[in-house]
Structures are given as structure tokens and as C-alpha cells.
Length: 281
Ligand code: DGL
Image (cartoon, rainbow, N blue to C red; front, side, top):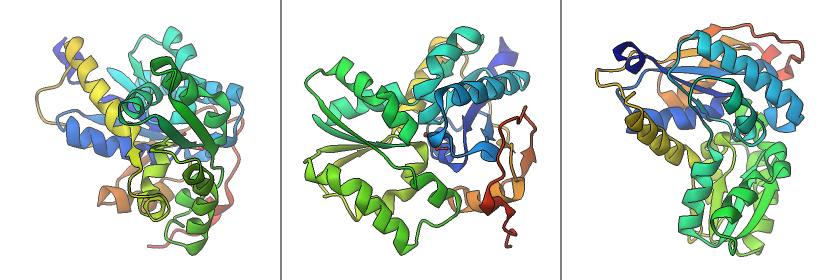
């Protein structure tokens, strides 16, 4: 048992979005060791089909179980919306998604709820279903934001163009009079400054990252799996270019992480134009 308690928690996303969950883990569960995987060779997930997402998630979970993780947190709304239910039956490890914790938190804060997410998550209606199952009276507006993840992964957050794109996605929600806005994609917390310039101050922002980690903490305690000794350094692995990930992550981690490259079965890999760009020191 002791050995399992000391095992790491596996966290994955398509890219740097899951770092928002990782930061919450550092804050709320600092003693836990983490293995972070980013499927950067195949992002963005948000424009993929449900069957592709399911296939990718299965591959990642096989790799995670080989790393002997004691729990997996899907730090990716798209995977949580499209694959969580199926893979929970298939793998013998507790798997947590971000949508239910995010929906529960949103319902506590408001009744007119806007959700910004990838197109795949918006199309799945996962947030609407989760929110209205808890409060059928809550109104939900979902907006798919296809440009956000590429802009974040290309490190273009501070460009005027990003602000303009955000205004186009968010204005309809502001016009609907939302009182609560959910970051329905883990990448979007990185855009907080951009988003706060557009939405009224009275709108409450919900970051599901915070609540999925609360849920993970409870679950670990319930299963007697909490780690009490100090954490090992986080292990980072990516399917794409390790240098690009390390370079981009620094602004959120405060250091250049050492990143391993992992080859999953990459039959559907597309090389991304921006990964061919030379990495600047
Ligand atoms: N960060 C992920 C999410 O929460 C995936 C984004 C993407 O690759 O499109 O949905």
C-alpha cells in the first residue's frame, strides 16, 4: 500500500493547458508527485472527431499505467467530454475529468452560465448536461473558440489579434447577460488577462482546474492513497517537440522544465507549422 501512496498522479492534456491543473496541484497537494503528459504532436484536440479523441486518450492511459500512476487527472475538457465515460470502464485506475467539478462550481455561483470551450466540447453539450442535471433552471450558453488554443500554443497571447478574437467570442455571451463564465478548456485560464478586459467585473469566473484538484484530494483521502512525504520533481513528457514545450511552459512554471519525448502510436500525427519554427533561446 505504501508503495502505491508514493506513486505519482498522472496528468495529461494536448499541450500547455493542463499546466493550469498542475499549478493547482502544486497549491493544494504539494506533497504529491506528478507525471505530466502533453500530446503536442496532435493538438489541437478541439477540432478532432470523437473517435480520434477516444483513440488518443486510450493510448495516453496505456502509457500512464505503464508509469504506474495511482490516479489520472484528465486536464483536458475535450477528453473529459468525449472519452471519460468509456475509458473509466476500461482502465483499472481512478480517472477524474474536469467537467463535473467545473459544472458543480458554476451552479453554486450563478444561474446564467456561459461556457467557452473547444468546438468539440461545445458540440458534445457536456457542460449543458452536467449543469442542468444539477440545476434544471440554470441557463447555459456554450461558445466554441477554435482559435484560442493555437494562439496560446504559438505564444501569441499578448498580440492585439488575440484580444480581437476574444472579443468576438465573448461579446455574444456578454450580450446574453451571463453572471458566470466557465473556462471550459484548460488552456483558457492562460488568457485570463485578455478575458477580463472584455467581460464585466460582476461576471464570476470559474476555473474547473481548482475544483478537479479538490475532487482529487477528496478521492485520494477516501481511498487511503494520499502521499505524506515530500514530492519528487514533476516529470514532463510530450509527443511533439520537447524544446518547444519547455520554452513555452516557462512563463507559467517559472523555470524551463526538462521534457522527455515519448512516441505513442502516432498514426494520425500532423506536423504543426509552428513546431517547425526554430526555437529561440
Ligand atoms: N486543453 C484542452 C481542453 O481543455 C484541449 C485543447 C485542444 O487541444 O484543443 O479542452
